[in-house]
Structure formats: C-alpha cells, structure tokens
Image (cartoon, rainbow, N blue to C red; front, side):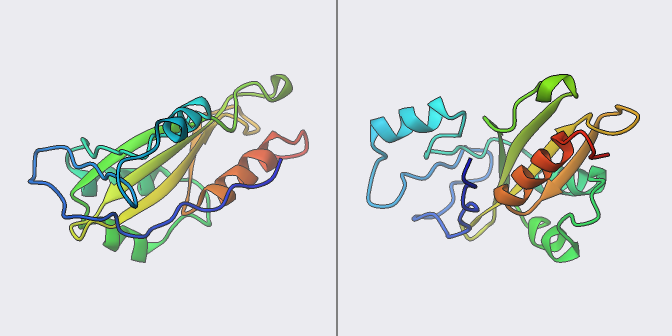
Length: 160
C-alpha cells in the first residue's frame, strides 16, 4: 500500500474564532465538495471542516508527548510550539487496523492543534499492545507516514 503524504501545516484561511467557540475552516477556495467529504469519511479521516472543540490544548499536547514511549517522538521545539495552541481536535484514522493476524491491537489517531495565528499542527499517535509483554503503549510521530511505518514494523512477528 503506498504511503500517504504527511499532513500539511499550512495555515487555514481566515482568523481563528473567539475563545470558547469552535473554529472551522472552509478549505481553500470555498466550501468543500460533498463528494470529497464523503470520500474522507469512507477512509475514516476527519472532514475538511475541522472544529477545534478541545479545551486546554497546550495541556493536551504536553500530556500526549509525555506519555509517548518512542525515542524518536517530537522534541522540545514541538512542545514549545504547542504550548501556544488554542484548540485541538482528535480523529481516528482508518489505518492501521486491529487484528494484525492475532498479534494484538493497534490504532492510529491524528491530534490536530490550532495555533493562535490559524496554523494547524498535527501529531500522530500510534496506540498499540504489540509489545513483548502486551502492555498498551503510546508512540507519537510528527507525520502520518512515520506513524504508519511504525505500525507496520510493530505488526511484524519479529518486532518487539
């Protein structure tokens, strides 16, 4: 299966909404095409109109990065950037899937953070029990392709 390109961190058009109200972006060039939204939904991806309902986004980012067990998780520069986040949204991505031929459970989430200037920054959380002792762990990556590669690697019988 070909790898998906990393999510763009380009700013959404328009200003962020007032604090306490959801922020949504109409997408480039106007409202999204309904067929495109249906295709995204079929893949288990969030629609192009994201709402940042999560409160205390900076704390959410800090907790997400703190629980990550992978050595190549995003570093202090990402933590400092996300300390300014004003909202967040979490979506479960369709790949990877649970099962892996009976080896365990694995799920991938996109955590999208809205910065004060309207820029969206995403982190990808790989949650799985594909460890030797089958304990549930969290790995965090700065792009979807890296998270997908890690999921495939963990799913291999020789991976620990």
